[in-house]
Amino acid sequence: MNARLVNIGQLVVVPPGPVAGGDMQMVPTIAGAELHIADGRIAAFGPAGTLGDAPADCETIDAEGGLLTPGLVDCHTHTVLAGTRENEFVQRIQGKSYAQIAAEGGGIKATVKAVRQASKERLVELALPRLKRMLAGGVTTAEIKSGYGLTLADERKMLEAVAELRTLQPVELVGTYLAAHVVPTEWLNNRQGYLEEMYADEVLADLRKSRLAAFGDVFCEGGSYTPEESRFVAEACLRNGLGFKIHSEQLSNSGGTRIAAEMGAVSADHLEYVDDYAIEALQAAGTIPVVLPGCSLFLDSEPAPARLLIDDGLPVALATDLNPGSSMIESLQLIMSYACVRLRMTPTEALVAATANASAALSRQDRVGGIAEGMQADLVVLDAPSVDAWLCQLGRNCVRKVLKRGRTVVQRAE
Ligand code: NIG
Ligand code: FE
Image (cartoon, rainbow, N blue to C red; front, side, top):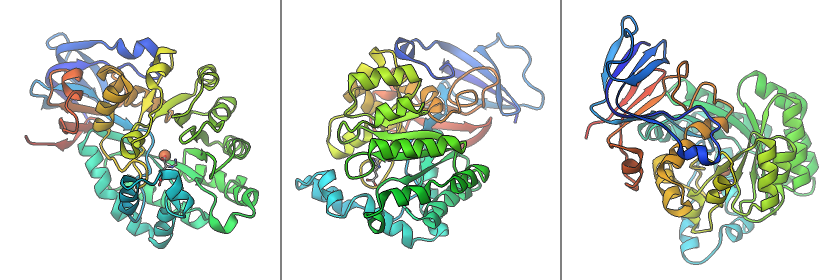
């Protein structure tokens, strides 16, 4: 796909990730810019009139004076799901906690029940409109986790639904195997047996070979899995060529982030209760801290210390954690704006966190999430003069156009 993007009011030149600490604020912009796309990749960009010849047979796309940024990357979602949990939403309003509801058999287990009953076709049908809305909100790459099946067949069904969704819409999808989400009721007396079955070498090797999953994940928390069990999951994933991710320190300081660092995890996600020692370990390991403030917004709880992480020099990423229980939020733009208000991230830091660093949390930083020659032309045109002016509007979808590999896939009217 060859194209020439003209009339860009401001081009935000987010560098490829990971972008750490103070560099997250140091993003150059070009006023009155143009950008050339050849074979779906960024070929050149700069002030209008300073670029060489446009690529042959190229379409001209008018940005109408808008802001141009990399396509957003939602690096932590549970978008494939069934059933709804608005009953829990109301129970929390009336005073129950997320942990209490889970302990009483609701929570993740309620969604597991619904997912087990749903066919793969039904899971696809339910996720497709969500992905279309995410795309319309500027998301061009998203991660989707399993973790609501908790049997070999049901976990595979979820990842096969992700694979099918790849063929039905333009958002690039990365599958993550999260069989260690909670301990299924039928295995409560044999937790290790469950992990050995679900993270057996042949299971993981097959998920990798069939491209159903690029990562393995575990929910390390009291009530789910211990740090030692998380290490077992990490070792099995790494031995079989899957990258390792972890849900750590969401509801308590339970030690998962240290395991992330020790095992060289690609990312450690949540981090609401992370301590200084674990922050240092993450930094030394090069693990991306993924902060999910949608949970704080949805559960009215304390968020992760993102400001501290950035000030300590880490490459913080942001994601929605879209799921029916702790963050029923599809809008990454809303999460970015909320991160500004609640986490004291600047709008530019929030943009870097939801593009370059989110891409690094998916090991896609050489291809996705930045503006540089040779990177995939995944781009968003926004109806705003600057990143600050965009993200100070909470809950408005400012997206005008979305390009995936240089092709216009969203065109929104005022
Ligand atoms: O990332 N932490 C565990 N998993 C999800 C919640 C899933 C749910 O409540 O359904 C999360 O918050
Ligand atoms: Fe999650």
